[in-house]
Image 1 (cartoon, one colour):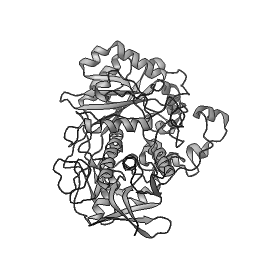
Image 2 (tube, rainbow, N blue to C red):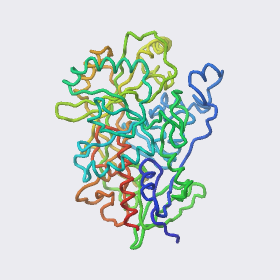
Image 3 (cartoon, rainbow, N blue to C red):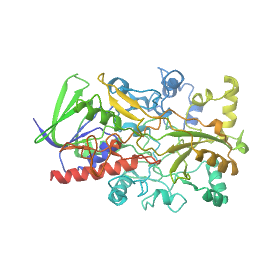
Image 4 (spheres, one colour):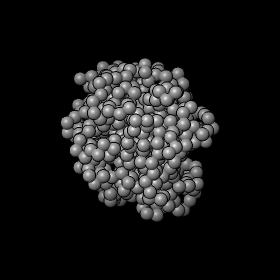
Length: 525
């Protein structure tokens, strides 16, 4: 049997950068790798397209009414349900089933993973964020630099968020602010002392979004199509890097392979995968294995490989609170159509115990009106009028909280093949009232009764099932992702995070996977 230096499982953020770190070794990437159908009909600005075309039903709603999924099915992220974006979760429930009470999450088998629909927020974990990890910020620093160089990141240094985000000398200019967020930032600057006393800071978002050309990719064009069109060249996804690795010969890529288990031998690792075309099981062999299938699917593979249907492993995800904000001076104004559905500002708030919450501020121009209409308390007709006139005056603060392991949250592999997921609910936080009070002070109204709390798992930031530890025990990993009890199996994705700070973990997962890939490559030399 042919033997590779390393097998990488998956093609999401972690698997992709583990493969980058393995440069110079003979690497096989096994992936289901679903990709988007052609979306040539969606070129230009969403609102211009609506004016120029009589019928956009197929790309916006779908012949199978895909975009109306949340009206009659358990809700999923708005970016995952439109016709051209639904490939991201294609067949995931059938091939990698997940069950759990009030679980709002999904998994992806697409090339690039869930990052095909991510918000593109990129934040470096600081020493404070890495408390409890067996690695330090200095271990990740060069990898952060390399990942951001490859992606292209826009934002600013020197604002009030730099102490939380750290300085990045490679930033492109930030994305353009819509007028509602430009006003918010100006009002914040005038009232900054009040916010500082409450330990709250606001600043520009850091995004893996180009505002200048880079490596053949064009800048972001403010087309409002993030919810409907895949592969915007201005927004980074790991799928771009996977294509580069394939084209350069850095990896041998085998798609439509669903990895189910591995077995370690004295001289290597054998990996079993289902060929989705033939229906046959295939076995591949390598000297080392890097699993980056996403925390839930990685956990499934590890438990299945151990024949373990009893152990419940820890599971983390960021609890969320969505706070609508209204600037009454903007009611009835024209909606900005050359805008973005990406986060334009970030908020960091510190509670009395020193724990950080982090939020992203979004406008309303991207999603379908139907995604909001049925959440309003009026008649369908009145809701349409409300949405038309109030949408330009509305912003949404999506607030994320940190999560540590707890005895009520975990994941177990059932004998049926389903992952049994449990995530304990998060109680309301006092910092929400603080933020509502401060934002009201600068003209943005809300009320705690308006706060929406998506089901646990909705953040899609799954982590911590196979955590790093200085002294790893069973189902834990060392600082280089090596799974305890194995000699050649490395966990490279969010499964190996020791805890989950409030900030989006994707950039840190990429940097850590790159670091682990380099360490594995060195051992294979």
